Length: 167
Image (cartoon, rainbow, N blue to C red; front, side, top):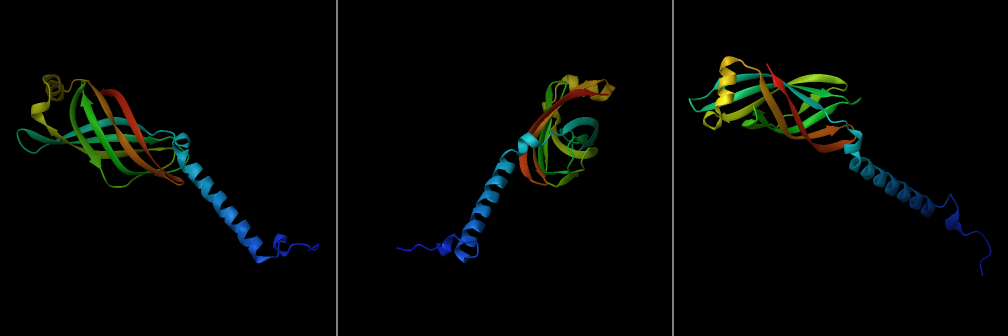
């Protein structure tokens, strides 16, 4: 029977050091997974306000709209939009959809203007939208979609929806 100290139990033994290193790596990996899974609880949703619409006719039936969105980042860290998909409604009628595939950096605690294109078919628009665009009347708008957002410690897909009035 061996009565002395087991050499594996000492801090100087190489196998003990390897076991401790593996435990630290496993703990760090588990913590990083936990942090990424809780990211949607940490990120405050950015807000979107439609500020302008620019019309670019392609033909008598097709048009490209360029919408100016003010994107406000309420977080104390920068957000990067990896992709951004959206649908725009005017006076409760869908006028078109669009997406941005370019990265957009929204600095912390600031508002950034994003110009987003929309493909639109004029034949699908109702009379109230065309009338409001021609006369410059106040219009109710709604923008909804999903943004693939990356931050310093991970990424998340955030759905969004915002309504307001456009003068």
